[in-house]
Amino acid sequence: MKEGGGLVYAVGVVIPLLLTCALLTQLHAANPENDQIILQVTDNYHAIHHLLGTAAELRFKTFMEEYGKEYPTRAEYLHRLGVFAKNLIRAVEHQAMDPTAVHGVTQFSDLSQEEFEGMYMGVKGGGAGENGVAAAAEMEVGDLPESFDWRERGAVTDVKMQGTCGSCWAFSTTGAIEGANFIATGKLLNLSEQQLVDCDHACDVKERKACDDGCSGGLMTNAYKYVIEAGGIEEEDSYPYTGKRGQCRFRDEKVAVKVANFTTIPINETQIAAYLVRHGPLAVGLNAVFMQTYIGGVSCPLICGKKWLNHGVLLVGYGSRGYSILRFGYKPYWIIKNSWGKRWGEQGYYRLCKGHGMCGMNTMVSAVMTKT
Ligand SMILES: *[C@@H]1O[C@H](CO)[C@@H](O)[C@H](O)[C@H]1NC(C)=O
Ligand SMILES: *[C@@H]1O[C@H](CO)[C@@H](O)[C@H](O)[C@H]1NC(C)=O
Ligand SMILES: *[C@@H]1O[C@H](CO)[C@@H](O)[C@H](O)[C@H]1NC(C)=O
Image (spheres, rainbow, N blue to C red):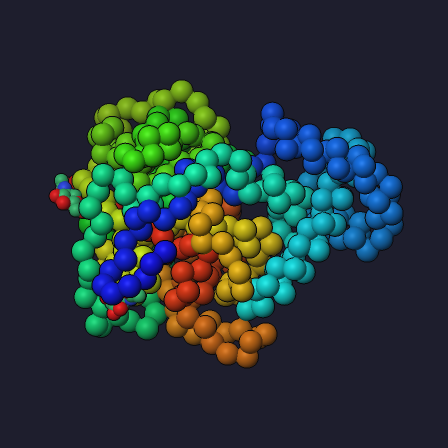
């Protein structure tokens, strides 16, 4: 990516076709990779037996209790124990790579990286900033506050839970519309992700195969287009979340918020901050690889691929002084709302360091305007 003079837009950046939410938890989905994993584990049968009675198994049992995990068979228990032990090592590796955050056991510690990342679909190029919309114009950045948080201003709904459905893109979309609607009307509403999961099949203008696909991934810019064309989005209460793709049950008369337009934001974190403050919470795509083991702190990995965007989230604020015990210093950070429930991360939130295009967070940012 070239960062030259003036504004750099997300054009021609290589991104995956769809955001698959880094959360493929259908363990036995028809996928040859899973068979591969199971084979490897079978090969490792003796290695896993060596784990029995160790500290790793003790931690596994604590983990099962804490997150209410149950495995139907002894074989599955052993398999998950093996995966868990590997994830203990991965957490240590992530800790070494990302010393300003804390990494450890999370509710995803019994999923292999492959299961978690769900990166099987669509990893071809596409223009992140291109979706038939002009990118936003440069915004004045002179008087931006040192820190800012839309949660304190009432523009952000409670952290939600996508469950075992690759619908992060729908949560990122509703978050952006909820914020824009709050700023326009003063009313905070929970909007329906399920409507998007069931009804939205909108495709990218350039990458015609990148179409929103329920629990298998999607893009926020496609979803705005869908909401514009459908005539609006319902509230959560009238179209509740099930976490499974079903028949479209959208009803015109239940529309709570209409969308007028949307725009993509330049690849420049100063500009992103200006849009966040002046416009509202922004939908963001990023590479979620460090999020599987994230417990808290400001995540600032030494290496985090910027082209492998696989997760859709919501940017709600930033801070200038995130204290890092390990680096004995302060770091500016972004505040990111996730959709993995409140037990994940910092009460459902992720802090990512600001100013480095970390994990590609600056390449797929969008704002939405509601219609009143
Ligand atoms: C939507 O936004 C684009 C620029 O981002 C602008 O050119 C266009 O006129 C807007 N359309 C409407 C209907 O407001
Ligand atoms: C959104 O839904 C959650 C969970 O049902 C609820 O606790 C919260 O009060 C709702 N927020 C608004 C603004 O309606
Ligand atoms: C980002 O935007 C700011 C403010 O508009 C500008 O001063 C800065 O030069 C831009 N950075 C890059 C790398 O283009």
